Image (tube, rainbow, N blue to C red; front, side):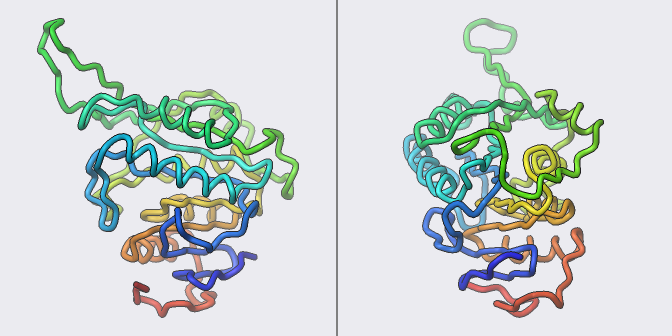
Length: 274
């Protein structure tokens, strides 16, 4: 059963949404999380409701260092982080985002395990050809993203119930480090940067046990929480925007069979805590 932090947006026995800034929140105890699955802001001017997704690259890296350090505090010694980030970006200047954030995470104190390449199949991030059919200034942009797998102190997981809930075929397919599945529709979800449920589903079943606590510190529309709830994990989400907290709540009720009557309360149905 999950605790009910005083600043929760809503909480049930198995799901907790916290409306707060993940860098500043005190909602989670140190060493209380088994797995973090998240996709942080990319610093490419996405129109989030309550986060300015722009600024200098130096300020973006400083912000990334802050939230990575907080997440490291929350992880158990055998806890893992699955970090969905772009390979690179060209908006506002070419930057090696994947390499830079991986290096930064190691400097913060994470241990590196592996990198999964996510082939988004039907999504292209191409925004310009550069110099057309000329060597003067062509752009090379790969329509893939990364899922960087990191851990805190030890890779072998010793905590938890040791029941994975993963099938043989899933294990064989997902331990191949190239995953191919489609992205998610912004319009369908109602969020400017959703990832598909398949991404956290694979990470949760491959890297956590049944009954483990799964966190998304940039919860957004709540996809990680839905996947965790559907696969018998405890789910915690943090988001700075109250509207996204309410969107996640509604999706959990609709897609994960979270029973509304099991709320501990905190806010009344339909209300948004601000």
